[in-house]
Image (cartoon, rainbow, N blue to C red; front, side):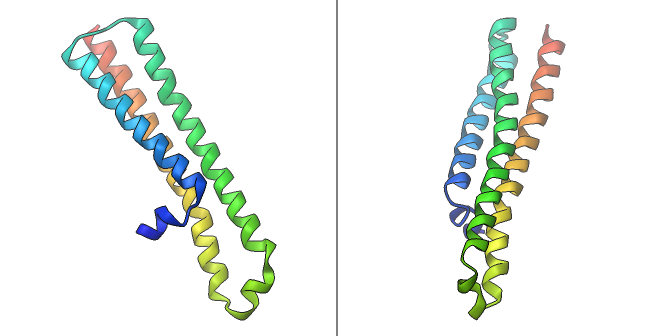
Length: 123
């Protein structure tokens, strides 16, 4: 599991940063809506826009990480000539950024709809 995060390269680190930001925004928004009852439309729309942006950006960074990984894997075919298992390992690492990016987008989209419905219910 550690390989999943460490071998994804720079795109994986960017995706992890997006996930941290997303978690902070979700907690802050939920606290603001449920506890503080801060129902200002302008404040909510900014936060919800950020969750939408993180969803789209996570998918784009994930696909970009996959394409960079594939490019690196196929740029040096002489590396893989001696050991065929290396190509499968490189492909696995390459696709991990797309998987993680899609997971972050899913969490972001679900949180967007939950926060929006919570806002409408409290309004």
